[in-house]
Length: 503
Ligand code: SF4
Image 1 (spheres, protein in one colour):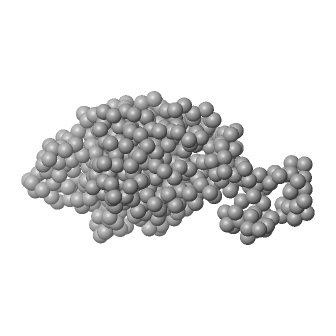
Image 2 (tube, rainbow, N blue to C red):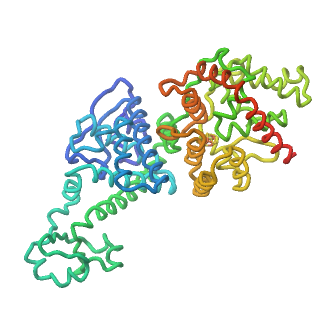
């Protein structure tokens, strides 16, 4: 994949990228001074398609971790920095916290940034998201590094604009008037175009003379961040204009589109199916380990003995992802639908095909993956008797509050979740529920998939943090069923009451 020719709008993507998966040439890193995201010309060189995908997904995880930590703010700055440092280390991006980058790290940094620039160029909302996370990433990197700020000043040719000591001497009164705590002994100023620091100009925090603002060294970091934001905005707008010329290479465009959806979990690997989870265990598992979307579907089917097509797909594939065998799935759906008045013959004729289809036994015989959060969140809004979707996105506030009350979480956690819903942070809201219902433990590295929620819940509840093997968790579910049956009956009764109210 050759990055270098992307700058030409008229070229097709197939000529702009060398997509031969055998090629492994390193990317040109000349003249970029260790930090690459300020580039104006696209990087050149070749990487394999596997690297393309790997780099992009890895950086997306970093940006998602930043977004998550920002959303759940309220921490002290040092605590925040420490957490992010740990997060970067866990994700294998510890080089973000150092000044010593290997060539491989630099390549990963540059290429992953470039791919996401392309992926997030398409719409204003996506551009804004990318700029916000990348700017925060640069801020953190400047915090962790001893030299990055200086290197960036060099890149932006700012170091040569340092105001000489004699001039500072002459302007002492004027500079003192603009800066509280001005100290002549360590006064360091830079001359910058006043248009680049309009915010500081309007708050009268900089001295102005002949079109230049005298920027104190203490404001340099925000100056660089602002410059970076503007730079990214321009570059993303430019990349957006290039995209129509790239549409014809579907494979690459599909990857870019998937990346910009932030979908880290489409390729969810279905657990090996077997006899580990049987359909009579689903009530118990749904109470303890289902995310709200799947719990809603399970309860709806339990009470109404029916689900529309979208709901059957969403829940059916989730069950498959949990490791429920085809036979058990058929048994589950048949039992439920027959309770609703559909006879076995009609079930086999009308609905069994879909269940077998999900397991790749009919039609194209494809191995369908369970739906990711992104897919569920962006699905059509459920109407009438439909019950698919993500409650954080698709339910109104009152209904969501009602659902949360059934989970018996604290008022504080309920308000936090509703606040996150209001701000559109649906997956983060879901993670908050996980945290509220799994004491001491949260989801690691963000939430992308309902089956991830289920597995991590089972891992925690079974007391084994090393594995999420379904057998072990299912076995432990069985053992605990006896002891908790009274609680569960109560909960199930609650759920049935809830649906009775609505019927
Ligand atoms: S965020 Fe994901 S797992 Fe949670 S309810 Fe929504 S779709 Fe389900």
